[in-house]
Image (cartoon, rainbow, N blue to C red; front, side, top):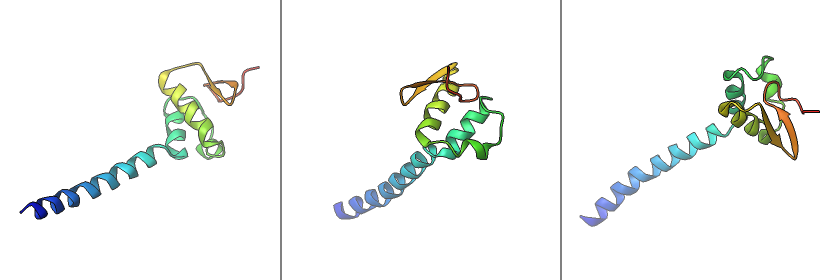
Length: 88
């Protein structure tokens, strides 16, 4: 009886872990970050142009867009959230 309960638990746990990993990794994709930036109106150009940027840059930009910040830092530089250009 105990062995079957264990294997039922394993049979439930493995798909749940796999699904959570899949959705976490999908939420950390360049595509998701680009969609967030576009959704909040912080870039008006073509989404394919945004995808050419570095993933870490897009992550910071999307985070700033979500929070409504006017600027964000990446690699020691300050950038405008609207358009993603470096502040002079």
